[in-house]
Length: 339
Image (cartoon, rainbow, N blue to C red; front, side):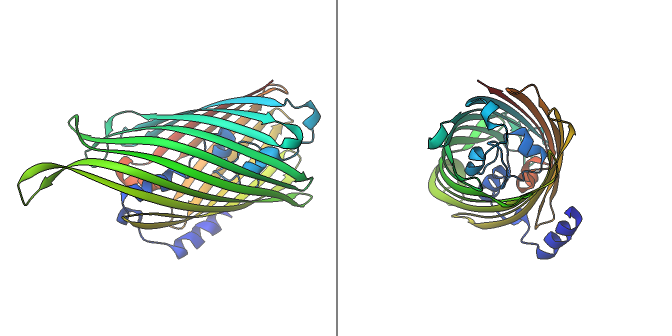
């Protein structure tokens, strides 16, 4: 299936990523990111997931067979380390709280903090990135075959570029994101899902530039508002007890004053239960229509009915910014504890 989609993707194609401004390619790359290790290990495929780790807000409310034994409150700390070939690194720490409020639905507030080292990109510019993320999510079981959900989140970020330690540009932005989702049990072994995502990102940039007309160094200030729309559909086929095959399709549009970037992606993942209700092995890939192929793997370990540990590794998951940073390697750790 992965080889077939790769051939289709190459046939569809698209303008090379290098032709687009970094301001478009960076949010496109971030839209691939998954802070939960189970999703990350399965190539990011998650639209029809039954777990709250999914980006689909409806997944959190999906009924579980052992719901009566599950805790009503769960805390999930997560850590991600992303290393690039250029020597740049991103670190993401996240904290999520899942609250089952019964007939009122499932609520999932979350926070995340993003930091980076200050290292030169491949173009010679020093790069530093920091961000704070805030989320409120809700999911509701409509009937045994349908769940719906909504998510509102805000990200405040700053980017600094420098030469030999001297700042040459700084950008600050606030991203406001709104997400809707649904999950449906279409057949006894087949579940489908859909996610609609919209974000608006006003930004302010201050840059030091050389004015050839006056032969002087000047400070230039600009403002812009970027927009992005993502649509994700997917299915999960349960081929055996505790074993699932995931397949998603994601389409996205990213636009700002520099232009418009379209993306089409096919995340594929598999989860196979190796030891019943204890150890799960995972693998996946993400293929896009520009011929980029990311590889992922990982495992999940149950530590009892109230705790679990998930680990994931990803290779070259962020091709949109490979031009500046080189290929990325990611390690993601997630812990869930119920109360």
